[in-house]
Length: 423
Image 1 (cartoon, helix red, strand yellow):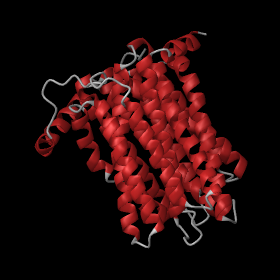
Image 2 (cartoon, rainbow, N blue to C red; image 1 turned 90 degrees about the vertical axis):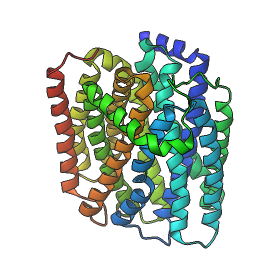
Image 3 (spheres, rainbow, N blue to C red; image 1 turned 90 degrees about the horizontal axis):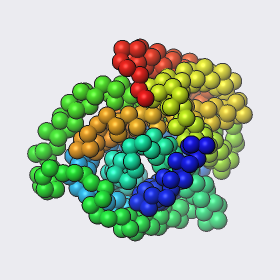
Image 4 (cartoon, rainbow, N blue to C red; image 1 turned 45 degrees about the vertical axis):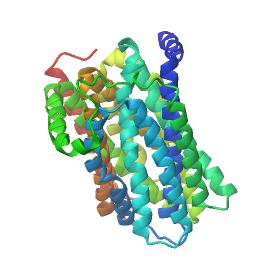
């Protein structure tokens, strides 16, 4: 098959493999860290987390990305991206160690959230940089395939990291601190692997000297406005980003619903609920993997916008059909199907942004992309907190998400009809 042949060629590219290794180690550490936080905040026996409490925790951890994101973009377009991966992962390793100490100590809860926030804030630089650097190690003809493999492999690595976290937590007597320390070790390995990449290979192609930190505050606003104007001029990229933001909102709302079902409706014990959540996330990751395999062919068949339409339209039909029963097995099938639809859309969107946005603006646009992702997820958690009952069963939420999926499919179809189809 042509896809298999291109995949073999892609994996023979030395610098692509190295960049992929940085991503896999970094995102596996993310998976470990996120499971530790979920276990500590939501599934601890001493806590009775409501949907509102979960939404508040997500807001504390994710909303500040709206402030960090623009700074990340401006700096990513001036700092050597290899150094971002090196120093970012070293910093996260150190901060994760601090989080482990706070879990073991009797400290105010807000201090724990501050530590966790710092770890996830640095993550904005690393993930945006990985996406912005990908076109520097892959030729344009195989960029869609690279976008299928790289982010999806990262998601699978995060899922594997989550599974490893479950195992370590079991062996360490439900110790969340031990799990966080495992995450710190993986962050350290990712930093070391980044040193195998040449310092200047990943760009950016700066037209000026790298921005000094003291000048960042005065230039961020101008750089962000320039990035937004550049995105407005690239209507295809803007339309895809907006669609992906809505799809992310849908995925976030359903994630909170499944979390509440695992915690209260499908299990009597915290450990059982955490295991069911892990199963749901694992099935969603399997959907991500299938999307990675299918998307290169699907984009060639339907076009990039067309594939987003297929994914959103399919989700609009499958989500209510599977989720309205609120039964365990249909919801697990929905986790797989919606994971596939969400990741398929994201791969197509990533490729649209990478090909439609100039390299000197790519870091800023991907940082804006990240901001939209997190604001959408937090917004979804807030809506879920208002709608969800204590056991997680909500017909209005399922119906509302289905309407949003359908709206994305219709809007993308209308937009596609006004422009030439993407190849």
